[in-house]
Length: 285
Length: 341
Image (cartoon, rainbow over all chains, first blue to last red; front, side, top):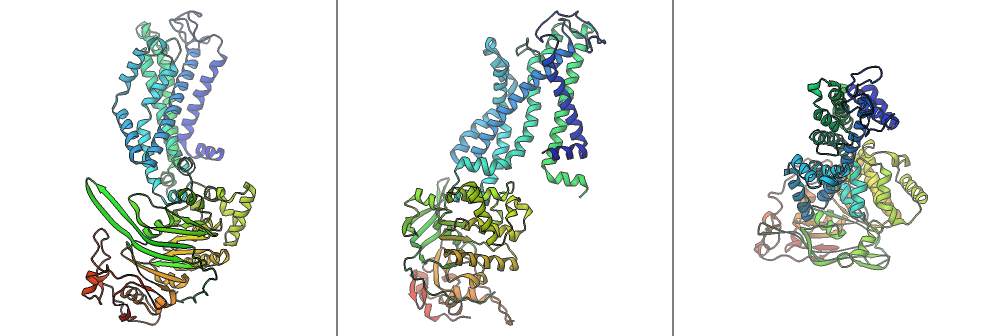
């Protein structure tokens, strides 16, 4: 694994850039554990200070340090994204593999649900959930809701892979040798499906962060908990652009763009690693 | 390759290891209200003795694969057993494949193993070879992890493979090695009965010879019985003790290999053997006109009659029964009149 990582860093420039960006942003987010003040405190510092040696990224109109707010915000946003990714991957793998392998009624039942979910628009559903649960809304509930909306396309993809695996000789051999259905799925098919899960996880993470930012910018989340979208929401509430407090909006946007870029570069270069044909064409073979 | 082997002396144990009686297995489909029935295995009875290699020959779509899948109990709908029984005798205990499902499940791989058609793809491409052994054989052998590993390694050495292949992925091995591995996989539990479905079909002749020798050697060491299916008559000549010829889902002839090759009783067998090239013979081989019949709508009477040069009126009306004749059994109204070409 380490050797693969080293080779990718040396030979694949997209991976190297993506890796540096993602790890850099992750370390920056990690730094919020050592922040000098709690991220929920307001009016601790003089408001509206431009970037300076004392406040690198300036301060907000609410008297917070933009640097430490961003650090917490990226952490929370990434945590939200990862939670959505893990839950939705679990759903996608279970539904996709069971539906593809068992077929018949199971397939019909699960794919009916799946296709119905695909047809539903995401944002209106999330807004509806937010309005219904207004007072008891917390980020884990929102993450679970987003996860329930984010697994369908990948479940179909995994189902198609499992469908082809089901008819391979090694599956028939395993059935004949007396392996049970869960054993076949986990031990014979899962290793084959793993790269698909890995690649879709990257895309799903980007999608989940996008959802979080969208909802928070509109104020449909716990606005007292700093997130990237939440910072932009407060900046809008205080009319930061009109007041000329550009640093309040610019730095969070730059951070999220860099995070997206890093994850995207990782995703495409990992795809290249998984698909040997594109690796070969890169070598000029 | 056409060196016919001598038949072994009849086994002292009279009790056969496999008895198939009046087996009928049809593909029954019911799509959009249209019922279709494909009679892939139609009234087949045969017995296989201990320590015997029984070859099943027939052309593509004659129902050979369906037959052995039914014998192994490895069928899924739409293929269903309509009538008849398949009974194994493992160590004196009789086991009815379709009546005792749980016992049958436990017996698979331990007593009855299967080398599948296209067994080049039997190994999972993304997992190391050792996992395949573990998944298929570990629970049947009841050994500790270390003993199991040692047993697998010595077994591989005996069939001429370096135990290091256990740490390899299938794509790192050659076709011949993979075929050896699948045979090793099927024999590691020392089963009493092995079903081999076209195990040499995708191999070139050199590797084929090697694999056949290996199968024969393993069979003799373990004393197991093998049912060996292939359309390649030369392979049958090299390995089988007895041959059964399948045509359109029915067994048309059965007998000791040497007799079937030298004195075929059924016109279809005669053509099958006449079509084999022989060294020094420059005569043009004549192809039998026509195609194997559609099993959803088979011809009346003897299913071979539309293609048979000896067909008479009776053949179109009545189905000939499989009756003993000389050293084997044959299903033909004009069995005595067939001349080997």
